[in-house]
Image (cartoon, rainbow, N blue to C red; front, side):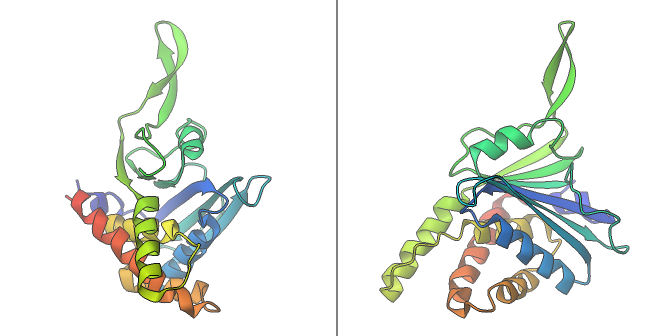
Length: 221
């Protein structure tokens, strides 16, 4: 079964992304939500922060429904999990947080060396233990490396210094390419809504979204 086929008949698809302050997690969640609404889906969006705004923990949960407004905002066990850094890998593979059966993990290989493996509680050698699961698929995409390449290319082209690294936009493109829950056009339209007051970033972000999508195509079956 292809990645896309996993979710095409699911009425409500739950997505969570996790990273740290500075990764653009909040903005990613908002863009996904806008893109879902533009795709005629019912969407909820909920952001969770750690104590620090930058370098603190941050995650969001979005629900995309084909059958009406979801009853709650909470995304405890998503179908799709996007992980940006090592701390998030450790936390969101634990049984109380990790993906549903047959879920998909998209993770940032620039900052995560070990493939995320969801865990379940079980018994091993007569003792309680964390048991690695096998009912999932994990796809590694170098969000940060691709984003840094785009930043450097843009600086060279424009002669203007850019401090922002659009790793969140690369992850958005990968999400679009792997799941087709929303189209590229709707993702770009959603990004433009979120960046309505910063049109100077539109071209920059579009390039990151497209490169993330292009990279993801090698994993489609």
